[in-house]
Picture 1 (tube, rainbow, N blue to C red):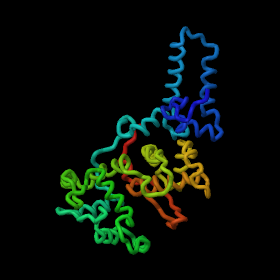
Picture 2: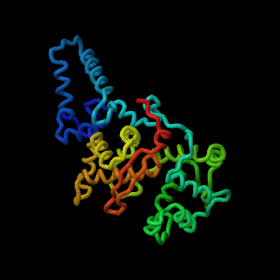
Picture 3: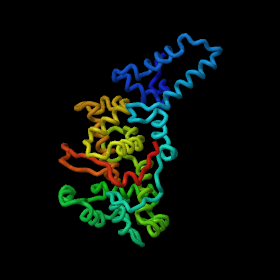
Picture 4: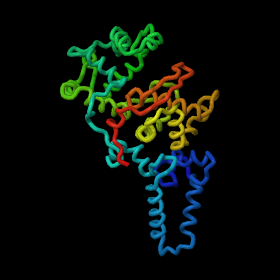
Length: 333
């Protein structure tokens, strides 16, 4: 019997077939697809004398549980059960990973620097919104002068709206989702919770709220024109696992792209026919590098970046994990 794309995957991972072994089977590895799973079960039960159907089901369930708890090479040492919890319960699996509510030291990251500029500008009275509901242009331009490098300021010359300084725009959105800022009577203001946190612990207490809002509420796909590829954001904890495990040395983005594609090959099916001028694999690689490595890991200061070329069509760099990564998430594996 062939599993449907939306059926539970026969391998027992808890995911839909299309998000699990379907992609691996398409890749030509039958042993890891559903056919291989069924063949293995047939071999296991061959010659066994079960007293009842319930006994046979219990045996199959035990075997499936054993496989779910066994590390998988494509998951970089995680078991299917652990991967399931990484994807669906990242903040509710303290035996796998924990996230402190306060950092040991203040974080010097792009999003924190921008939030610091925003908080200082809001002050006690706040900032009046534009007619389109954005930050006032004078502040946006002043923030750009402080935050951007000379090279970046050349590229951003002539900023006319908040959206043209997207990192600031994203910071403002995330701070709102985190409950740190809000709109009140036509002005952006700091919330009372934010004021209290900043008075007590400063950015060491603010950063964890920005982090959680960024991974749980903010839409990573908002900035780009790639397909939705929800698994890239949903697997943020797996990406952090990769950074933690392999980030001690400088590595090219392709290393992490390879790891991601091995773990979630079904994403290639989502990329088919999206962009006819390139391959599905190139689309996924480019999206992962832009959305997860640059837009998430570097922007939140979890990875350091060393640029070789910052051209729009020629972006070459290497990455290494930052000191902050081990403060933001602690793995217990």
